[in-house]
Image 1 (tube, rainbow, N blue to C red):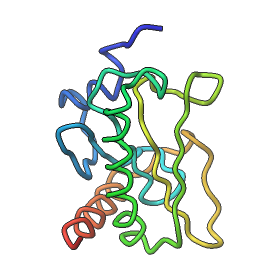
Image 2: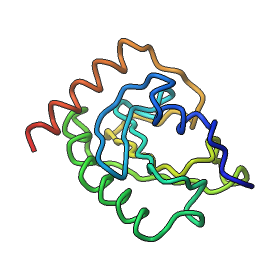
Image 3: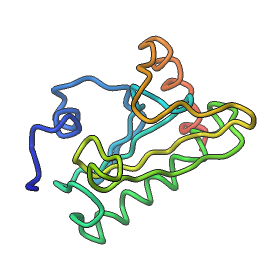
Length: 141
């Protein structure tokens, strides 16, 4: 499959579709998942044209992982989490629904079950409030 420049994440990067932006640098962009598995569920996407982990340079992948490492502690603090998990899907059979490389940072709170992947759209006002908490936590780092 060839990279589709009209995938939703490419449109978000170009500013054509709004999102709850958390953070950005020259190589990566982070925003809240609109169907979070838990509060604070954040997507970290590459700015490179890459569909999956097999389609990205090692250098660009390293930038994405550095962003994940930078963001995860602040996200967990912002939602009073107990930990986090990282998810990354490659191909439709593996659960990938947007064919632009991305990592999921999913905060975990002891005793709180996760929602199923991509099934429950969250209220926009709730997303905005969580995004603000995460940005504040990042500013404190």
